[in-house]
Structure formats: structure tokens, C-alpha cells
Length: 267
Ligand SMILES: Nc1ncnc2c1ncn2[C@@H]1O[C@H](COP(=O)(O)OP(=O)(O)O)[C@@H](O)[C@H]1O
Ligand SMILES: Cc1ncc(COP(=O)(O)OP(=O)(O)O)c(N)n1
Image 1 (cartoon, helix red, strand yellow):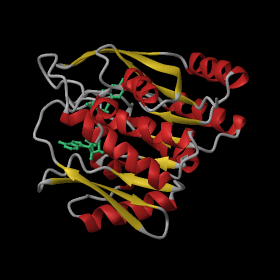
Image 2: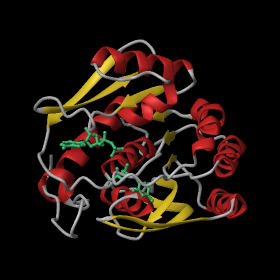
Image 3: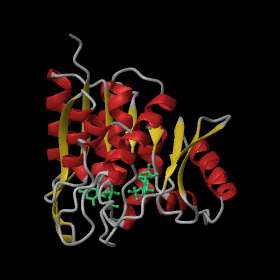
Image 4: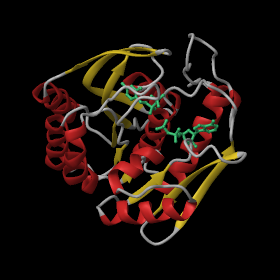
């Protein structure tokens, strides 16, 4: 039996809906062995983020190194990276180990508004990590920060995707969860020459905590199996749609999605 292995480099969400916890659940559900390097511990629940406790860049490098020298990595994803120091360390590790199937989810702010990336770290993200990304998965506000383009229309999104590709990402996905016009959510994918659109019915719910992490982790899991990025994004869209459709209704605020829904109910 071939065991496919994926590494997540991200923050811990004590509430279990986002971050490392969402990533490992998603890897497991998609039949991939999950490994982790934790960048920060957050005290977090469905009501918001109560505390952020970053680890040192050295501690992050040590975790990545331990995984790399023994288990091996078929694909990896980054989530909350918090500081420029951690970003540069992660970029060095990716280059050192020659990892190509890297999904960069440029996490900046939690849904409740808590910052998960220091403002001064955006430049490091653009310079050091973005050029290494096989797939980058910003939401609309993150794409605006990375490109400086105000995104109001699909044309704006296409322009931002072209720019992110020129900045070095091989495949650019600009997710549509924050575009709440219309009945559908549309995720746009650009491969440097053409655009694809992944559409699903917009679900009217407040239980969307961790959708971005879950989506990027599903892309990484599928890439770990050797799938083409376009197919990986298609599966990720279906996975997250099932997870939102069958959300669990737990917690008093923005609840988590249901990571076993795709396996249990299908798309
Ligand atoms: N209300 C919704 N109904 C259906 N899909 C959604 C909804 N909100 C987000 N999604 C999907 O969840 C994924 C994450 O989207 P988005 O909310 O843009 O990212 P983030 O969680 O990083 O802010 C995307 O695939 C998006 O299409
Ligand atoms: C530890 C941690 N990492 C990432 C996030 C953001 O996750 P995301 O999937 O973008 O979900 P929301 O915060 O938008 O619900 C997080 N909250 N915590």
C-alpha cells in the first residue's frame, strides 16, 4: 500500500475548527497521513481568538526538519505563519528539502477580526514564500493585501490572479466566500494562461469557521496523491461544500464545519 504524506505548517486552534486541527482532520478524511509543524498556539473558540502564543522560528524549523529527515513529505501547506522570521524559516526549509507541491494559504486575519499575521510580515510572505507556491489560495481580502488591487468584480479578481502569478505562484486560486453577491460561491483558478471557475450553491449559515484552512488542506492532500492541481481544487471545493452543508451547530458563535461530511454524505 502506498501511504501518501502531507505536512501542515500552521497555528493551533484550540476550538478544533481551523488551523492545524482542521488540516489534520482533512488529510485523514482524504486518506492521507498528516504531519504538523506548529507555528503558534491560539486560545480560540467559535466566539473568537482569546490569545496568540507564537513559537520561535527555531522551534518551527526543528519540527519541519524532524519530519523531513525521517518520514518524507509528498505535499505541504502553510496556514497561520504569524511573523516574518517564521516565514523566512519556512521558505528556507522548503528550498532545502526541494519540496515543490507547496500550498500557501496566506492567512492574515481570523473571521472575528483577530490578526494572525503581523503587518510587517506581509512583505516577507510576498518576497520569500509566494514565489515558492505551487498553489496559493487567498480569500478576496488577502488577495487585495497581496496585490494592492481593490477587488469588486470578477474582472478585478482575474487581474489580481494574473499579478499573483507574475509574483511567482504557479496556480492561483482566489476563493469567493467573501463575495456575498448572488446565489453561488465561485472560486477562481488561474494557471498562467487560462481561468477555471469552481461554483457551488452559497449556503446561508454562520458556521463557516475554518473553511479556508479546510479548503487548502484538501488541495494539499490531493496533491500529495499526485493529482493535478485543477482536480485537487475541484475535490477541495466539493469537500468544503459538504463540510459547510452538514455543519455541526456546536459552539455559541461561528461554528466549525463538518470534516467527515464528504466521506459520510458525499458532495
Ligand atoms: N457560505 C458559503 N457557502 C458555500 N461555500 C462557501 C461559503 N463560504 C465559503 N465557502 C467556500 O469555502 C472556501 C473558503 O472560502 P473563503 O470564505 O473565501 O475563505 P476563508 O475561509 O479563507 O476566508 C471556498 O471554497 C468558498 O467557496
Ligand atoms: C490557528 C488558525 N489558523 C487559521 C485561522 C483562519 O482560518 P480560516 O480557515 O481562514 O477561517 P476563519 O478564521 O476565517 O473562520 C484561524 N482562525 N486560526
